[in-house]
Length: 181
Image 1 (spheres, rainbow, N blue to C red):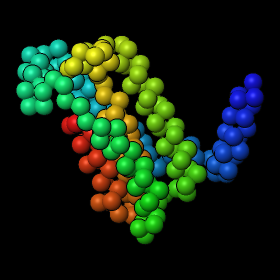
Image 2 (image 1 turned 180 degrees about the horizontal axis):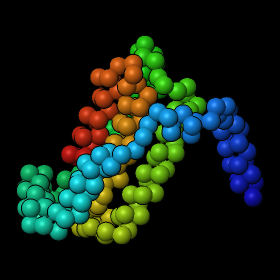
Image 3 (image 1 turned 90 degrees about the vertical axis):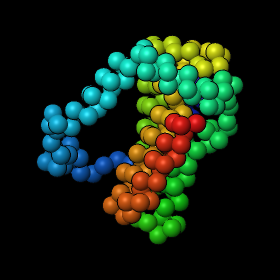
Image 4 (image 1 turned 45 degrees about the vertical axis):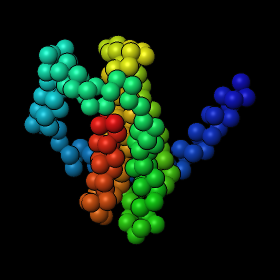
């Protein structure tokens, strides 16, 4: 009970300073309008992924990767590099770049986006039950490391895209490296 009260107190104190004064929904309605064109690329990519999941092309790709890396390939660096964009988010202001948000909003955005990503990925892992190349378990797909890496890279991009597009985009290099590893 004390844990729950202290957690609730912390969240209230932390998010109290993050309250908005202006109604952001009216700003969003006027600034961004959704159109069907925005959904074409994600729909095609997700649909292609589902169609190719059980294809011979995917099986050949997995076999080729095992020939290159071996079936017992393990690397610990992919446990670290998904979180480099988070360090970049906090470190960007020390390099002279102006972020979109203050550190409290950055922390809240990082926390919420990572929790949502983790929840979605874990539910998908339990639905798909794809076996790992080393046959250790059946929670291989989708990659949690890669999903978190791209989530954090997107957060970095959001914070610094108006200040320095190269710095903002650099997180996607780490995310891609995570996916490859």
